[in-house]
Length: 525
Image (cartoon, rainbow, N blue to C red; front, side):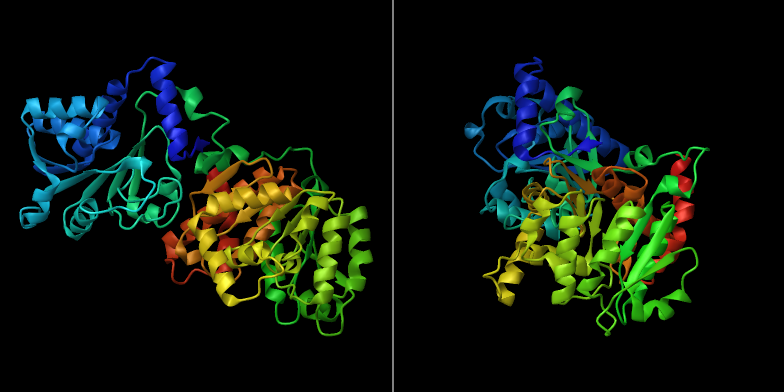
């Protein structure tokens, strides 16, 4: 997998490359500039190129780009956001080189006074203003420049990261350039993949400028990007000498009156993802309703309270089943929430000897009581969306809607660190669903998903994911690998379906129907 770096991690890679491996900063800057120029020549024929440079290394890259494009015969105009006398090191040397090559250089304030008419569709903007080191909101005059750039109709290429985007969180620091393409070096940064930074980054290119592979694959960098080849690597070939028991038996505790569809979708996705056996544990008063709608799945009638929801007294039957037959216990889709169900789920967390996947109402059942997760005998995978995550983070003293809104906002402002912190604290594998979905393990490793689309924002899509994770877990993948594989494939299937029928009409059952075809296509790669 390709690693995803923070600003500090990338700075350390720079430092070690220069100090330990003896590659001068000027060489790295020249290679960065050449990489951007190569992409420009590959994709853009605009004669006029306008380069905006800051005072740091990002600006230094911009000076290199301006010099090379000017030397190639393009009409280049460069606006610098600092006093040239304040430039230092490699950036200063490349500024001087650009000047000696004859690049037209003007102070940034001049851009604010000129008409934007000359900057038409035949022009190209290069954003090399701020880079990855930004730690506070963008201030004038650069903020004004960014706003004016965003009003232009010509394409924008950002160097390393769009100016104004936080490299570590993807948040907008006051204002940010909205690029068509971003060309970054060595590794993608978190801000390229987390929203709204991902939207500002446009299409992302990751260019090799000579960093040692040991640095790019360092175990010290804990976050990785899940791509198609990573999912293919996790898909296991089925041995010829095998039977249904080889691929595990999942007990799915799901459904309540009015919510049996969630149980059906999760169970069918589980089978389609390769589980050998699936049993749906459901309140006994709903058995007749469900029986006519299942074929391959089995049903375990469980004690209910007479209202179509599970009774706490069903605990012994569930644990007996798991001790004799089950390999994975999945809890939550359509389960409903009340005191007895909460008590039941918490008991199962403490007593189960097999891995658990907890979603939906199962998560609500442990909200405010997450300390029990550390006492589980078996691995636990949690699959909350942002709202459920906010409830899991709630302290018993918090009750107001305002505090819930603050928690949701805090999660979205830093999805990776939120997931990592919770997974470490609770010793669980956390699948934080959203845009993008982040998977975090108890060891501090995290994975950012690259598949999926807005069409998957539909009822039941999460139930399908629960079934798929449970299936891979039953097939003896680790909790981390089962989650990574299921999340990517789930999103990839959504992309395949959306490409064929559009995002607007996509429903969860479409994802289930497409599982076999997509699996076959992945196995052939």
